Image 1: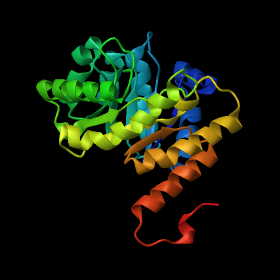
Image 2: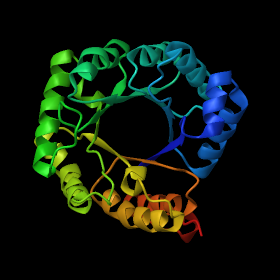
Image 3: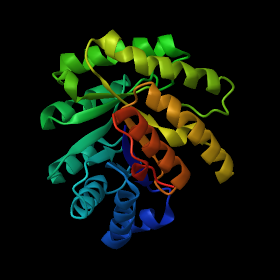
Image 4: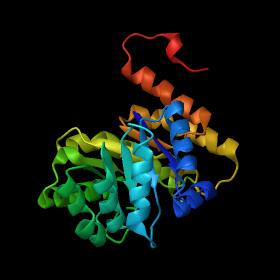
Amino acid sequence: MHLIADNIQPLDRIIFEAMENRNAFPIQKWVRFCEDAGANLIDINAGPLNRNPEQIMDFLVRTIQDTTDLPVLIDTTNPKAIEAGLLANTKTAIINGISLEPRKLEYILPLAVRFQVDAIGFLLNPDGHVPADGDGRIEAAIELYGACRRAGLPKEHLIIDPVLVPVSWQNGLAQNRSILSVIQQLPDVLDFPVRTLAGLSNLTAGERDVNRKAVMECAWIPMLALSGLSMLMMNMTRSQSVHMAKTCRTILTRDIFAWEEIEP
């Protein structure tokens, strides 16, 4: 289970100002922190980028790839910004992401095909809403897989995000429990070893108590790991959650155990 840092995002005032002013230092500092904390990939969440999309994404990709060799996720809904990021890319980039929403199939999916990169596919309905249950997510996965294949995207380039929802939703717990089964079913349903991704911060959206957030994240990480999740997107400053994710990975991937691999 690879860890994806979601710390580069415009909701962080320092990151937002660095993006606006094209100031590389704060962004590079965050990237180094995330890599030292154990991140395997860096998500570049630039937001919708309604102003200067190409210039900002070009700056972000170049800045981050000058700092690390880790793969980057180009995370925006703006197709022009995604294209600019892929043109600036000199290492490994992933599009984050596509779904059954018509605009994304029309404008973003072709970029994954053109640049021959991986794309994260969200299991959403065409209207952008999450399906009501696990069966709805499986149906969305089948439809999205078909759309990707028709567009010419190799199946190995599709990474599926079944979309965790806030546990505070009326049916949040039930939806997320069904996602554990969806992750397990996808390789059989799509008939290939599909990679899966989950955004951990979705679980605690709306909750401000950091201790409660930590408890909830640490409860779900082992279940996601045991379900076979490939990638976990998370806040790398939450050391308790990071340690839990690393420990789960050690338990599930090592044949010979050594206490030295467990961080205290």
